[in-house]
Length: 243
Image 1 (cartoon, rainbow, N blue to C red):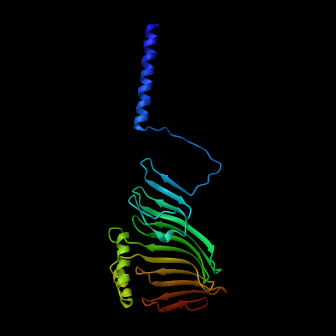
Image 2 (cartoon, rainbow, N blue to C red; image 1 turned 180 degrees about the horizontal axis):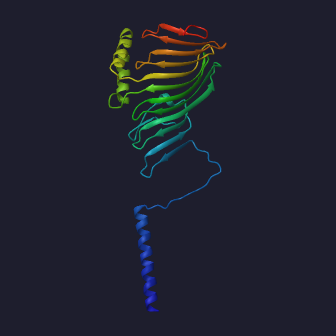
Image 3 (cartoon, one colour; image 1 turned 135 degrees about the vertical axis):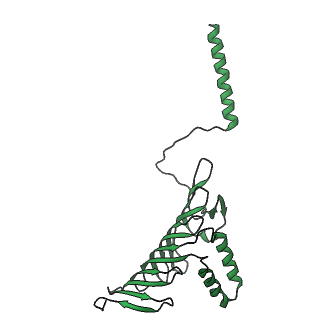
């Protein structure tokens, strides 16, 4: 009996010690809960170390951008709700944003954009829908984006700041020079509708200049255009035209 009492006393002491260790170290047990419905302003999906991997948010709490675990201010995003994708190092990797409203002037302002970014860079693929008082656009865009070691997102911010300081006449040459140096991204493929209710596929060169254009007008007329570096049509193919 004395041995049993000794064992129970030791077990009680051990249990108390373990409880104290768990309390001091903040050890946690995994918890799983099931909800039929949840109402929140923002959800942060994080890794065990706290690194954000996905943010789902309303407009009021929509985040800025993320670079290697640090969040930067993006006041231009305050009109959107949606989600941001964030990679393992804590850098933004793309996202889905959307908005839609009618202003006091009765004009529609609506849009949705799903983007996939190159590593530590801007969007390489975008699915876009935009609706305004002037036109409605729906398109798929494929972009060439330079490696982050060639041009970083901080570089792009610096380029914009430098361009704003230049006289108006010097801004386009400034951007053209950066393009020639391979410092800027360029749209290479654009597939979508046109302002006159047609549809088009634009294939572009490394500087973003359209070199081949496939068009179908609203009344069904099809055409293939080939363009030079200045955007001049050098050859056009239509049904029934010589090959």
